[in-house]
Length: 605
Image (cartoon, rainbow, N blue to C red; front, side, top):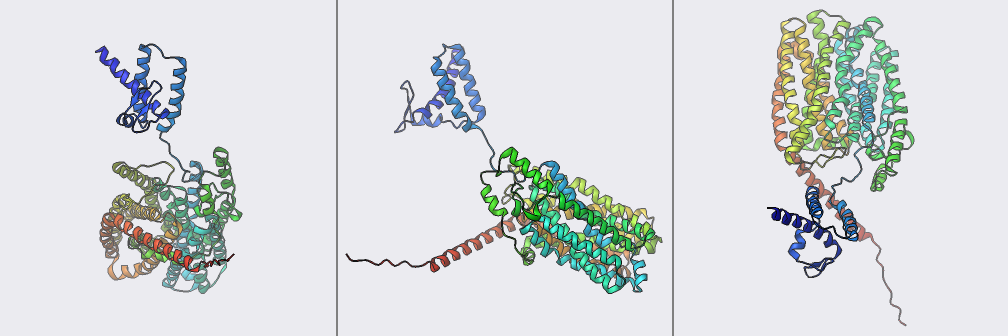
């Protein structure tokens, strides 16, 4: 038994040393020769090539070391030679991950960025909902009917649908900071006008200007998340970033009710002026540029209006740790980051609607958000009629919906990231922290919609409960509990489908979110205008049951996208590749046709 052990150790030693000697003298004709003249056949050479795993290498060298201790030591010169050769060979067996990180921003900086964009996105729902509790008061001041005042909500949503197509496209090319600054200035000036105007026509016009200023905040917040977060961590960040959009409809009426009750409805607009002014100062001084067409992964120095204190400090820290530029491939990033400013093209948003998969996602997203806007626009009228509440009490009733949205944000974003990791592990999909993965062969549609499904069911049932508890006139606790679950269900569906759309359009996230905004605002405008006539014609219970039935039909779209989404995406990618190849071939043909013909004249000597 001892002899067998020695034989095994000797074999291990021979394997390790032969692996090293094969570097030294690669022989011709399928043979190699070591220093002592021992021949190695081609088959042996193939077996002992240094492509061993790290664990196999350690095992072989350990056994060889034990054998050396049991046998006479070789000459010192031979030991040093073998050690030096082993040190040279060992790095080739070490696994390394190359390439720059997806974003250079630290976790704390990312957290600041996400909180900033989430708070900034509040201006969109605040602008729409802060004067909900005062609709009847405003109608009395202007001597118009409540229906005409509700028309200002419809015009607001229409303007909010159109504006992001311009501003979001500009942000994808020229940077997020410039777009935010432009939005804040327009929104602030519109609110000053609304606080000072005294006629109905001015109210309608300035409301449209107000919508133009605040509408792009949602598209920009989603685009910023796409700039700094990979698909594996995007669910969590998207939940935080869109929290403002979903909290706004819940807390905006509460704030508006407080001002309308104690200071007058005009103070709702002065509050928005102050709020926007604070945001403008914070973004000008601190908010870093994140657009990948301008600063790459954040390591490319920003210029002009795109510079900020935090952006400069992040780039300085990265340069000190890694040198400048951030990687050997940063010449490409620099070329990307220094594109010339271009005028936004709103048609890019409409092109997204032409894609079948994207169109299905947008319609699904729009239907769910419309449900939330239908509820928020009808609650003041329905609660005042059913429970005789004043403006402050009506505003406070929206808090339950906000808490449902908060619960969804804190849980379902993490659930989306967990589900991504679960599918990746099952499929053997390698996730590299801080690196964006290629999702062409990954079922991202199924991964996202598996998280949407429970929120969809909860929201659908909550709409039915909300309608019939109001119809029956039961305790206020009944519809308030239903509002909590409406907030949870709508927030889950809206956030996760937004994340999916960003996954599909990671190179133009603001444009993709502008398409979301376009669809949801047009649908919400129609829903807000129709809900009161529906409740009068059908009854409150059946009106909200009808909305729930639409959501049941939408379940078919969920299963269809889970089953066919990856196939549709692959076909779209193939079609795009064929178009690009065709365009490249046409360009080459044009260059050949336009190339000057050189005629050589022979000179006879």
